[in-house]
Length: 312
Image (cartoon, rainbow, N blue to C red):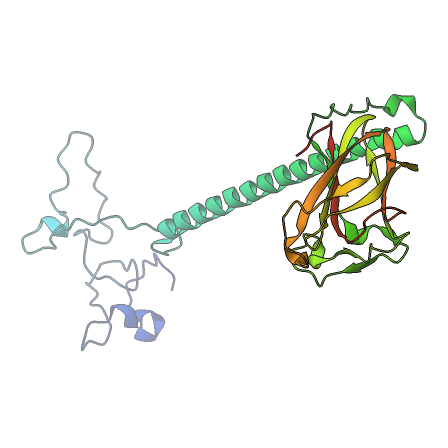
């Protein structure tokens, strides 16, 4: 039989495959069938109305009319089920509770991740633009120089003009005498303390005729300069010949015992002397030598130049 079979016969228990779902405890699962009542389904838990089989259907109550008194919801009957207030439970439509909240958290996580990715991309692009612009500036800076070297007039730049030297300004840096071109038996040594040359080196053996130390340097402009020489004597006066650009000076370079050291005290005889010279722009050569008539018992430590005619 199928649903809505209006036959009045009884159906065996085996005919209802779902009888175990509504079988009462201790019962055999069969439902009493009232005589003359059509069978609407295999399970008739309770009778909704008292309609008899074949009886005419009553018209439902219209708008504003009283409902059928033969029917009342079980919740309204004495001893019926109490009406309970149920709270809505969030569901995803498939019976999975809490899916909406979990889905909201998932969407928030995805949104935060997307924002982080966009921020990282923006930072990367900004860094690339910054470093590429720096490289471009360096390339542009080197471009005109290359153009000038190849004869391209469009790449030439105005050459910076050297500022005029002020009087007493140091030109270049101090030069260790031990690093100069030595000749005539002059040699580097470091056995006397208090020399200011690198590693305590200085030039010794200047007491032989022809012994010399030659220094070649450059100046930015022609004019008057002062050559300073740091030397050492053993408690007695000495002197030497100064030659500038191949021309010997008329006066010998004084190397007196300015430190007033006692005789034989080489370590306490260090002092400095100076000479005014006229130089040309560019390269100039100085030679300090022991010539005929000089008292050459001295050591050479350092040489340096200052602009103008100064004494300190």
